[in-house]
Length: 304
Image (cartoon, rainbow, N blue to C red):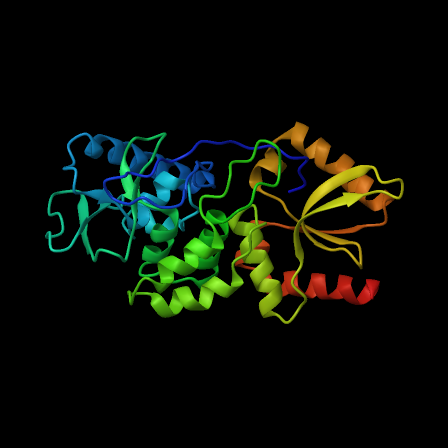
């Protein structure tokens, strides 16, 4: 998706009774994808209702915390195979026993293994973004998705109205180093592959697919200028030396005539600046990755 730079913002406040530490705060857009947005919205609604009666020693964690932070969790974690919405993930610190009630999936966490904050916008207690990612190592089985969630956590401010990062790479490392945990090996494998300039789950997956195929890792959200130094576009992924742009086309780009017209104009501007564009869809990322790899490899060979 070619963009010229727009987004959103807010901040979470650290609860001094739980932890006094560096800010890991901010809001993100809701979990992306129409198929997931309804489930994420309903999970969010139920969490807000439960929060009204939650004891002060309980907090949201795991998938529920990820949804509240707006992280791109896989759709498979939001509903089970029968379409039932996931129970809310609620945690306590040991030695308290994990919560037991209908609609709740209880977790007992060791002190020092997770940090808890109060979300400023939602006014609910939940694990920090870095602690939330570390907890997801126990439930996200897809390596690419574990990297994509971390990418979203540390996403840097790239455009004027982007929110600040939810956390830093150092905070992810600290959460992982806090102690042994379920999913630790998967987290350790994912962390070196985390990048701060990936703007979406699909961009993250596409980057990883290409890297795992032995292709050079593309630069992320690369700004293209023409021969006169005039801004042309910010492309999802790029091989600047070869002037190859890789663009993920979300479904809304195909359904929105105005957006589609803008995309065509920008692709023409990229071509006029000497760039070749490889356009990628959801089917390429999930079902046709071999064809995606072939197309990018051919473009790299052709442009030497």
